[in-house]
Amino acid sequence: MDSETGFARLREFMVTQQLLGRGIHDQRVLDAMRTLSRHRFVPIVERDHAYEDRPLPIPSGQTISQPYIVAYMLQALSLEKSDKALEVGTGSGYQAALLGDLAGEVHTVERHAPLVEAAASLLVDLGYDHVHVHLGDGSQGWPAQAPYDVIIVAAGAPVVPQPILEQLSPNGRLVIPVGEPARQMLQLWREKDGSFGCDELVPVAFVPLIGEHGWAA
Image (tube, rainbow, N blue to C red):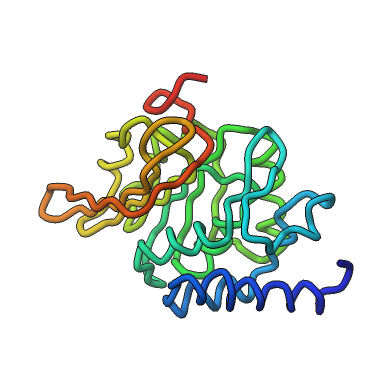
């Protein structure tokens, strides 16, 4: 595939078949994923597979998540344009860019320096000046810019890191995979009146969240 027209057709098929066809109904999420060029966020050798219904490898032993799971997590957050968002696990920057379309100010944390450099450069090239990429231990969140209206964690934690919960604003929402390295349950946490409630959503399989409040390296 070597034309933007061809990629646009694949993107439309992804939205209609993988997302709409499987219950994704948030129009803002659908529009963002219909517009954003996912193939820009995968290695060149994987670009022909960028819109397929599966995760793909990216550098530093990480992955870019399956489009449906990305859409499902974003939909679960009920994002508003005024939201301040934190992402843990920048990866190639694809989900951070979607957050940039759906929220206001976005901060994203990644522990692999080469991914930070590549994602930051690409996001600037695409005009996402309000998406800020940080190098650090994502299991600690990013306290310098807390609190956040929404937090999305793109790596599986053994338990929900307390620092991340504490960085939620009043009525904030957190989506995070929790469980064993090979299999987790996607959880939606909400803050209300100083306490936290949790709903379990769907089984998922993410790379492990490495850090002080995650898994050991």
